[in-house]
Length: 133
Image (cartoon, rainbow, N blue to C red; front, side, top):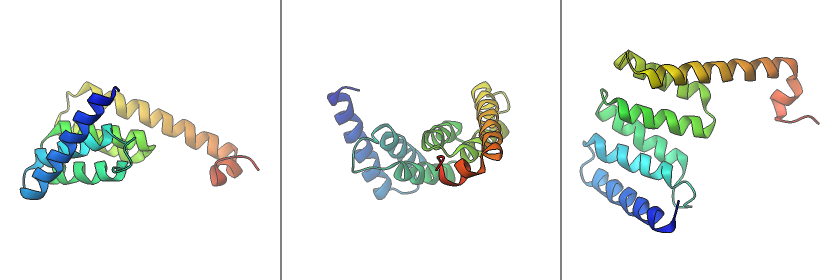
């Protein structure tokens, strides 16, 4: 991402964060601030936890908005929180049963989680410490 695009994303994330502070009942402000933060994780002012918090707030305010859930699932995937991402994508399928992308993500993430658990069961030391001694 070029510097000017990052600057625009940072400006937009800041603006939506300020808007969410001024009018905390507007889900879109929280969602766009959260997704902007996610896109700017290289910026030390923000963390993925900030993005998750903003996106969760947006979902609480606008529970039927599938896009906010998709963004949250993407952040969880990026964080390596596979089980949380699966739950989010399953909630999308409940809201929108024809959502093929959510279905694909559930299939992909479930398969990846099963493989991970299989590997951990074969190598309990690695699963405890993340590497072999």
